[in-house]
Length: 475
Image 1 (cartoon, rainbow, N blue to C red):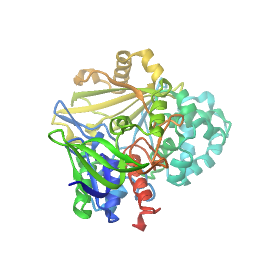
Image 2: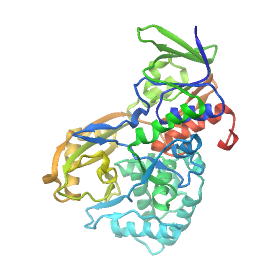
Image 3: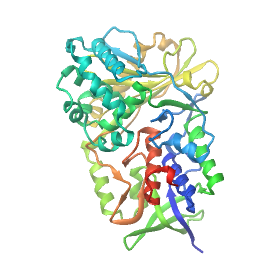
Image 4: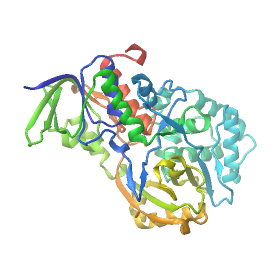
């Protein structure tokens, strides 16, 4: 006999769990199905030489969890046992400037932020300095400080950096330092690409978290998967009777007469089981759509086609280093800029300084990343990119090579992405063509935030749309 639910959520990552929690809290009979054997999706930590490496930096868009509606707000609303500690402030290295590492401070006023922006410009490009830069920056920083998260991440979400800042000033020095901060905030190792295509809404939100203290970078205990996703899942099971089934492979979403009606699951013996629901939420990576829709809806097929064109490809390179404790790693999260161009040439996290429980005694580890345009990634090749990344580590951490115990080969991915860049296609939470079908996750729009916080917020937004309410206080 077929089962019937009010809502089915496909995917038990942070967005799917958040969405299911709000639906279940509102009294909906809700089922979450997950292909893997555990909740958490891409937040899962990896075992590397005895270290638990989790390449996630959870962000909270409001220090007191106000209007971001991400994972921290969900934890409060669900009664989840989520525990976090604050990260150290990021360190900025200006390669080629001869300057020591600069901490990125919390500036409690727009005036203070304008002064700091002027100082970082003077340290990187003194040739672009003008007497009126700090004064001109104050109203710009004031707007950044005071704009609500929803306006920032919806109204400005598909606006390029260039368009946003040139509407506010024609001073080249401000253009340079502003784009410099936007480059790192969306993790793009190409200042020109950031200028023309960077998603200013998401970049500004992360920048504001850092510079104004209006939020935090958090370290969940013991890691993102078991410190955030698992407690959220446990809470919605216990408090709202939300059912979560693991090891459930979805064969397809059932669509009939222009509406979603449920899903087909592949059973243990290969048999097909149908589970029906009034509402179906797909909370998976967008690249999975082709495997769970047969046929693919026309609107999704068009998005996937556009996203898969070469112009939308980016290349990411990642390396993990395991070291002994003969040197002290300075700064949990660090950023390296080319002082001349403003390009963010390397980012990384000395995670063992923030999460010492993740590394055995006597060992430390760092993971680093570099994200380029697809064209540049193909031109340079992963091997040469990896060599350059390691060279920067030698410069930042004297004694690095002598302390090195193990390093992963440069790992990379050259693939389409549509999260940080305004010119690339994004998936909306619903479409009139198929009723009762919804989408959540880190590839959907709008999103009140970025990274883990943003992904979780899409679950909240989708749940609110299904419930027909605007604010969490209404449920």
